[in-house]
Amino acid sequence: MMRLIGLSHITKNYRSGKQNENILKGISLDINKGDFVSIVGKSGSGKSTLLNIIGLLDVDFSGEYIFEEQVINSTNDIQQSKLRNQKIGFIFQHFNLIDEYTVLENINLPFLYSNEKADKSYIEYLIKKLNLEHQVNEYACNLSGGQKQRVAIIRALANKPSIIIADEPTGSLDERNRDLILNIFKDIHQEGMTIILVTHDPTVAQLAKKKYIMKDGLLYSESEVTGVND
Ligand SMILES: Nc1ncnc2c1ncn2[C@@H]1O[C@H](COP(=O)(O)OP(=O)(O)OP(=O)(O)O)[C@@H](O)[C@H]1O
Ligand SMILES: [Mg+2]
Image (tube, rainbow, N blue to C red; front, side, top):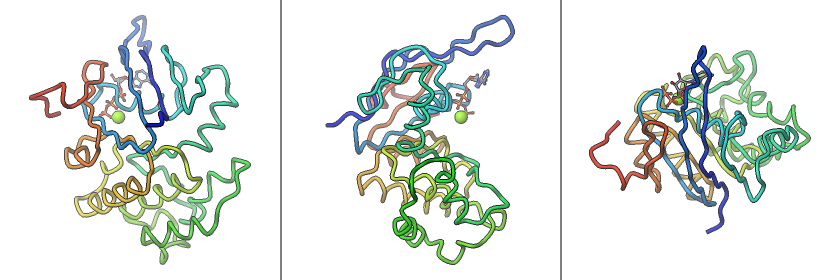
């Protein structure tokens, strides 16, 4: 098993007024290449906080974070943005597309801000695979929720990242679109992609091979916890 990500004793505090709130209380987690990991847990338990740290959107934490054998150094902006651009594909609940841009423009957006060149034939392959051929020149604002999330998935996959990080990726979708997105996750996992996702939906969580529950700032593997279903 090749380790992709190693988290050791990650803690995170937020200051609220004079108080220091301890949101993550010592998270240790290894993610190997090809893993499919899910995290469930109550609202406010710190799931997004953890994903933002893993996705290098937030480097203000304590503890050790190793990504592909590199120790994440919170002061090294160049290291962080390089890893973020090249190695991490992020998918959000509310898609985060630009409404005034077309599907193709949204997909190509990450390449505008990096030195990477888009692999056009791979992007065409993804567009076909996710059934968006007829929408490529459509403006994002005219798409359905399910279509928007498929665009967001293509955008996240386009630069062939090492990991897909998804925060509540089916939270804004109806059941039919949820199942469609689930099948895509299943597929890209089978093709070898490493995935970590956070969800409220047990059906989504069940898809993962390694299931965790976030509780009071700590992470428990599903087998450690019985009788917890939120
Ligand atoms: N920028 C911030 N400043 C201060 N407190 C914050 C900030 N972001 C999150 N928090 C607090 O940290 C805690 C965890 O938030 P987080 O968003 O990680 O929860 P979550 O598990 O993702 O919840 P949900 O399921 O509702 O998305 C909450 O109590 C929240 O109020
Ligand atoms: Mg959240």
